[in-house]
Image 1 (cartoon, rainbow, N blue to C red):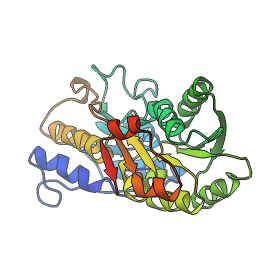
Image 2: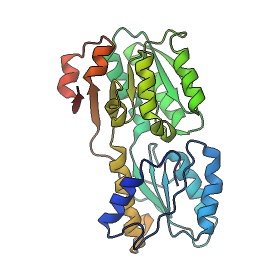
Image 3: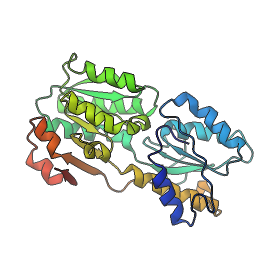
Length: 293
């Protein structure tokens, strides 16, 4: 079950294959997607449990929290494997990263903790932006930590921070339309699975409004956005999916440490920078993992 659109399903299939499972042959994956409407998640979890699911695979922090709660209502508790952008310990999903305990484990992209780095990169590439906005989904618990971290970082880099919230397509459009009114010169797109499903459209909106923007996925820069800084979401989903296969073979979630990304990708879209009239500092060009022309 997931919070957003099913763009993670390929990574799930790849992870299962690594442990000898092929969807439709020796394992069956029953998908449910909330498409950002988080209040649908509890009903979806209950529905999957009624189908006697052996494991709940949850993509996104809201889905992971709901899956854990639902899994404990049956005995024995159904194993839960998650991928999320939050700190799983702070969210109450596991006891510790190395020793999760209980019936839950998975992987984290730690995307929610990267907001200060994203602000630093954006301030360097758009030095004339006195005010920066953070777009955050108020229905996602990751947003509170992300907002607090970004506010602290904004004081260090000397930028005024404006917080915009959006939980659906119409609110995203309204947020972009309000940027100029609030004299915002640059934008950070927050970590949220619904936003991930809208990432190409949000790249187009950033170009349309001529607002320098940093996205939480490589796919943002690949779709025409200015820059992105993130772990590879397909990779961390694949890591979690490997755990699904191991649990099906008898491993216990409590014995499987939560996996964390080992590499983060900084991507610059040079064409977008040119369209915005921005000169990329040589130091950023030197540290970029990928430049799209």
